[in-house]
Image 1: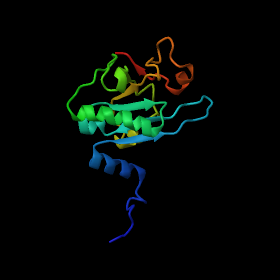
Image 2 (image 1 turned 60 degrees about the vertical axis):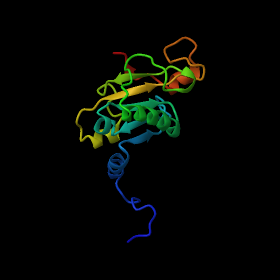
Image 3 (image 1 turned 135 degrees about the vertical axis):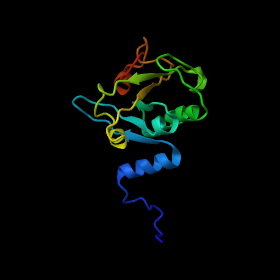
Image 4 (image 1 turned 90 degrees about the vertical axis):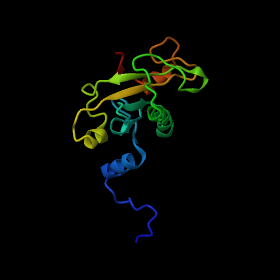
Length: 162
């Protein structure tokens, strides 16, 4: 018996993801920003929503992994509770202060290569994914007048309205 408190230390990354999904229902996979050219913001996506909740995976763009995981966790809690979040329309009730947000379908062909661990997890089988769109600190969304200009590069909208 090993005394190693980190028995998965030498485990392959995909095996770790499979274990997390098996134990917790889903995993969050952070992707570091790229300086460019062109620059790409950091993002975090789920692995396991399809298998656990029969709902599309979720990607959050432009937030640090811990913040993105918090938002994704709230979406997972809704799924676990049987709540069907609207897609392609604004909704309130998930974020504090009545802030609006939305989920938009992502075309996986247009975003090919953006979710490599998910591609490996599904063995190349098709999957669904949605972008969680979060507002700026004033409650303004990326396509609205007044959205914080510095966030336009941080949260590009890769999802599409239905």
